[in-house]
Length: 51
Image (cartoon, rainbow, N blue to C red; front, side, top):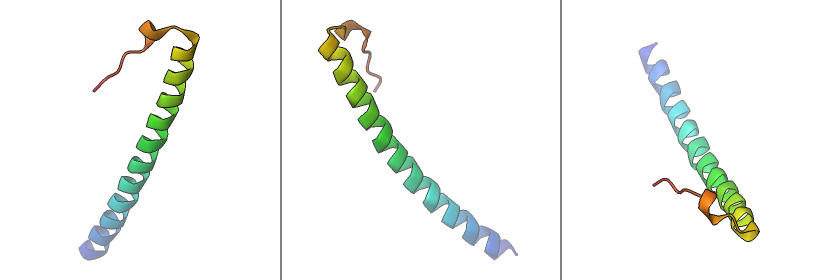
């Protein structure tokens, strides 16, 4: 029982990691597009990057 639980946890972890990487790339791409749209409008002061 515990072994099956651990296996499903490992599979869930891998799936979560893949989804996280994908969503992170997607979010950064969207933020880059939004940032480009903002800078092309000339409001550069409204962009604040967080590291």
